[in-house]
Length: 421
Ligand code: UD1
Image 1 (cartoon, rainbow, N blue to C red):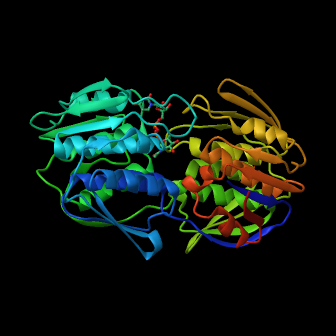
Image 2: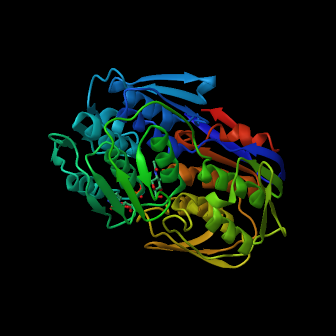
Image 3: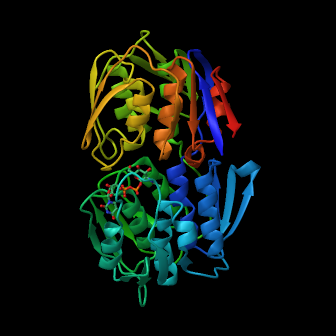
């Protein structure tokens, strides 16, 4: 199994190209199931989660052609062979559940295993299920699989969400494009990935209004057609690399970065003493002083501070001047990076959904491992600032969401390499 070895203390200077968003691509790819005609995605990220979604779609009979070394994906659902998403693939990645809405919408049936994914909390699917039921689907849980049918097709409905779930909004949005009549999603998620999905669906011929707000209205159409769509920039990869020069010093320009994707995060960086400025090609980041200042952070749904940047921010605050309070409001079990950071010399106390971080002068390199994707990224970042060598194992978590993290960081001067053990 591979590990990432980081030697801390070298300032970073240069440019890092930010990829297309993993979480956008994982919703855009199943959108192909809504149409017989091809969907072409450009600016696709090259990640193991994308390979998993490719395998899942292929198991349903979707033809997936990868071009330009994976940056362009052409998907065709012309000759579908199955409407069953098998446990063996779904268990690897929770986003596999995003085939449910499109399969029901076009084929009026779907059998989808309940997902696995990151070990960061319960992550149920009740909102997906109740939303699709409101649209006329009958859904039963048998042997770990959701068995869904919509005799005569889905019907438009009012779908109020108890919580603005990203996945539930995506599933219902896709399903509603081919339903009879009008669907209104209330308390819809507003994440940029939802906006990106709505734009792609509109290019395919869907009638959608209000994406990016809490109310999305969809007028169902009879069929969707072909489209070509560029995947939006990955705001979580962006935020992760924006933190790199805060750990290591120096000045890094994140190419493709946009402030509107990441405003709440940039506000916290500013309060911590980090300068972020817009350039013609992206965002330029450098810290104002040798040491960042403590800030309090609460994770929220968009446009609030993203839960997917909480681990990386916590790692940064470990060496900030003062005490920071981090509150995790989206997932109930998302501080698994804290014990690993403590092994590197951090002073963190976790109580329920709140972590108190007392900044120390320096972290020290150690052997660490993480049990989820963003936690792994936080340990690599911590290694950039730590004294000595940090070895991060279980790199397969990182490969789910970061394209060659070691290449991108070493290109700006980090001492980092991947080793096979
Ligand atoms: C997506 C992102 C993930 C991110 C998360 C929150 C993808 C592929 N993944 O995950 O990286 O961390 O949004 O920004 O886009 N919930 C329910 N019932 C449901 C669905 C969700 O109670 O039916 C709860 C979950 O347990 C969780 C919260 O809602 O506490 C947020 O989940 P959700 O927004 O659905 O996240 P995902 O779509 O799984």
